[in-house]
Image (cartoon, rainbow, N blue to C red; front, side, top):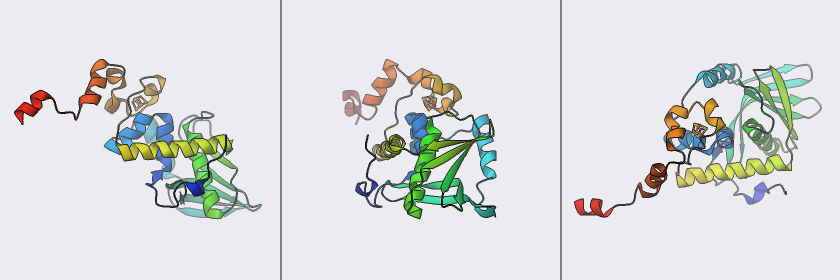
Amino acid sequence: MTTPDPAQAGEGDLLQVSLSALEHYAYCPRQCGLILLEDAFTDDAATIRGTHLHQRVDTPGNKGRGTVRTLHALPVWHDGYGLTGICDTVELHNDGRILPIEHKSGRYIAGGPADTQAAAQAICLEAMFHQPVPQAAIFSATDRRRHLITVDDALRTRVHDTTHAVRTLLEQSHLPAPTADTRCRRCSMATDCMPKMLAGTRRYHQALTTLYTPTDQQDNHA
Ligand code: SF4
């Protein structure tokens, strides 16, 4: 699999996609659609825990200790990918290494949605600092550990494809169908989404296809 060439992706005139949207989409496209298209973000215990955790790293700052300078709440972007967002923490090491660290309240799932978000941060930092950023990290408050990931070609392709998918979602304003699987148990959007009621039902799919199609009866009333 080849890594996409961001220089061919659009040069700064793309509809901007937020880094957090990548994680939402990677978890569930419908969750991303509910947040971006319907402004329907709902908190649960996990998201409130996450908000409290982020308050510690959301204040812009710049601290130096030993051989590492730590930046908090650093705005980042990538014109080629059309990405924009804020890094919780970025470490600048004396040996030249740059490491973005995304903070999560829940447990870390290897290969999960947080990897996509953290890799996107690394890709943005590469463009901004003009140097390779081959690793990123996810700090999980559940096990209080930092989980390092390698930003390889497969992950770069995932960032590229997910960015494209989110942009298509924004352009088409079409809310994806519910997944109605194990993800819904841990999803704060379940009340707004109603996955079990809607998924796989004939009435739901019928409603989607006929929502804005005028019927003969409606025409007669016009
Ligand atoms: S409840 Fe399920 S289908 Fe709905 S947004 Fe959450 S994960 Fe997606």
